[in-house]
Structures are given as C-alpha cells and as structure tokens.
Length: 541
Figure 1 (cartoon, rainbow, N blue to C red):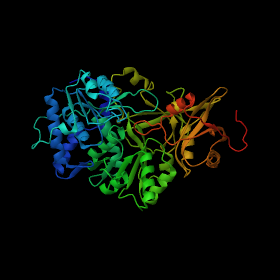
Figure 2: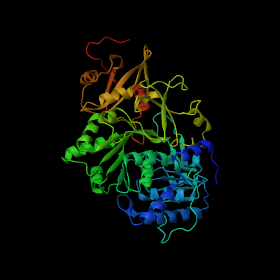
Figure 3: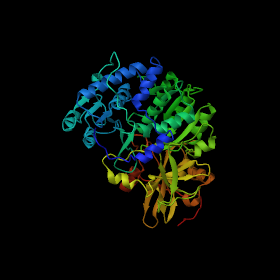
Figure 4: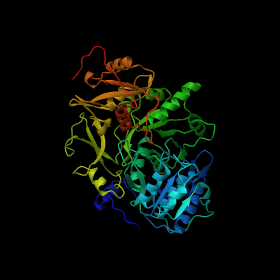
C-alpha cells in the first residue's frame, strides 16, 4: 500500500469509534449492504439512465477489476474530469472497493495544462475524462499533456469504461475505512488550492449526523445541484450511502431546465448554493408555477441565504437548511428541522456531534472568545480531514497550538451554539483602525428585493488604508441602497463608501464570489467604483 503522511492518531481514532462517530464501514461496504437489503431498488440516476443497487455494484466491480489489471495498488491515486454522470459514482466506488484514493475535484473551468499539473502533483495512475470537457479542450492538446504525466497507467472515457459484470466480483474488497479515500483540491477564494485528504470515516461522520438529524432514509429523493467537482456533491454522495436513498445528479436532459428536472425527478431533498435557489425561484415566478415540485428540504451552503429566498420556501412549505463548512470538514454546521426562520436566515445552526466549533481571538488563536464576540472560527472532530496531501507546512499552519483547525473564516457563536458567519478573515476591511465585516453588510443588503447578489470588498485609501465598496447585481440605485442599509440598522461607521453595479461577478468553480479579483480590477481600473455617502452624514474619519 502507498504510504501517506496524515493526521491519523490511534488514540483519537479509538475515541471516535467508541462514540459511534466512526464505524467499520467503507463506502463500498455500504453499497454492498444496500444490495443485500434491496437489490432491485433504484439507487441513482443521471439525465439518461437509472441504475438499481445491484446493477450499480456489478458496474463498480467491473471497473474495480479493470483498474487492478492495470497494476494499481492500494493507496494509488485516480482522478476524473467530467460532467455529472453515473460514471463518476462508479469510478469513486471502484476506488473505494480497491483501496485507491479518488480525486474528483477537477473543475470544468481548468485548462488542459492545469489538469496535467494536478495529475503530476498527485502522481495519478488512472484518469477518466469525456470528450470536449474543460476550458480549452479544443486547443489544449490534452493527449499531449497526458503523455507527459509519467505516472499514468490508464486513461478512460465514459464510453470505454467496462460494462457491468454478470456476477459479483469474488475478490475481497478493501476494508479499512480510515485510509485515504478522497482527495480534493480546495476551491477557496484566496489563493493556490491545497489538496485535502479524507477517509471514508471522516466523510461519513458528517453524513451520519445530517441523515439522523434531518431523518433521511430510503424514501428520500436526493438531488445535488452542485457539480461533481465540488465538495457539496460528495457530501450528498455520503448522505446517499448512509440513507440508502435515491441519488439524482444535476444532469437535465436537453431542452429541460433545472426546475423541470427538480419536478420531473420528484426530488424531496435538494442540495446546492443560494444561487441555485435564487435561479429556481425566479424561473418558478416567471412561469407561474405554484410549487417547486415535491421538495421538502433545500440545503444551501457557500454564502448567506437572502431572507426573501427563505421566506419564499417557507410559503411553499419547503424547509430551508442553512449550512456552513469547507472541503476540510464537510457540512459540519447546519440548521435543524425545528429551527425557526430567524435562526435559519441569520445563522448556520448548531451542527452535529461529529464536529466541535469554538471561536478564537484573531490575534491570539489560542484564546477562546466568549459567545457574542466575533473571532476566528476553529474546529475539531471526527469529520475533520486527515491533512493536506504532500503539504506538511500547510497542514501545520492550519491549526492552533491546541490542535483546533483554523478555518480562515470569522464568526460569532450565540448562547445556543448557533454559528453566524461574519466573513473571511482576509476579507476584513480595516478603515482607519475600525474593523468592517463584509458579510454582515452583504446579508443586510440581500434583504432588499431588488438586490440579487452583493459583495463588499476593500478599496485602497491613502489616508484611511481601506474603505468599503459594495458591488451589486440588481436594479436599486446607490442612494436607495444606503437608505435601506440604514433602515436595517447598519452602523454609519460600517456604511459602504463606494458603489458598483455589475452584470456578473467573477466566481470560483463552486460559485463563490472572487473578491480578490474585484479588488485587483479596481486597482487596475477595469472597474470604477463610484463614491457614495448616506444623506448629509459627515466624513466618519
């Protein structure tokens, strides 16, 4: 087996097992259990096909057998770069069966050269892709790039993947749920991606919490709207295998919209980001449809839920689920079914038992701050990653001296343990020594019905260091926006002093706004924020 440098500690592991947070179950073992219990039940579907649990296992076994024939051994890395198709699930589960580490986090926005670099970085032994996929596939010469990846043994396309076997594979399946199973390059907004390592157990710990607390089971119809290159899709994957429900991929057939797909598949649990919800609600209103299909719960992560979105769901008897997490620790913080609308809109809830959160002083990360105080969000628990692949220094720097993982995000815990996100630590705007928290302003701005999206970022200032600029997608003018923020209770000391209307924001592959790009564009003169001021308020400097 290939050796990995990880955070795995036997004493800590024994604790997770004793508490039932980790179990002797791999992803493949869960698949096999569903086959034994309900072999002919529908397990998963994309836009053109549906498979039962048994057919899925037979397909997984065929691919696992083929990978082994290429000479791969436990611990080897397998990557794929493709759209939301069943083949992705099959490849991941084949890796789980044989003890390989699977890397699905290659975004469509990457170039062929970037893919080659990441495969080299992982020393990938096998790779799956589909024709035409990627930012520059027509001119990127992927075949030439792959020829230079010396570790590669096999390149698959969906059409060349082995067909399902007629009988189950009789060789023993890999049985260690604590070995590295999942490798994901982060899609953060602040720089070069690290590569996160997870085991079956670190991913399943969070899934078990969410399935238990939200009472998902075989009757659930789970639709993930996130691309399979994004971590939310693999949170959905883990929940699917824990619940034994139907997993539906975001792959509407040609001519059908996402709203059509939600309705056609009769999804009851939809997972995505607020942008997905906003777009679905807009299409629903435009088409005069009274209800979004059979949806009962709508999971939203990645950015604050605008209050009008939550209210629109509640009116349809759809429960919004506000979620916070990272690739490093999955969807560890989430609201619960019995939370009221205010808790759902203003916080990310109290989460589950697999991850513990504390808030630390931003200058002294060993010092915990009391409830109600903003600080650096830290955490630890059974859902935490095993470290960053090939990056000892990056792993060390991500923890405080007491072993709490530091997220890079700022937040506030209330007295009930609900977490409110304040913003990225690096997004913090310091105006003449005064701290301004962008996410607070954004959340207030999004309460206005004429604002679709908002981002607050720093504009350099010679005298004060920085001033706040608010960029929006929407029809509201600058004066009306400031009046709205004032009515919402925003302090005059936090008021944006620049305004920018845009048609679209620069985004990460997972849909997060790239504020560093906005900052750079403002410095380069690509965008020109307009100075604004509320009423006759004097300069606050």
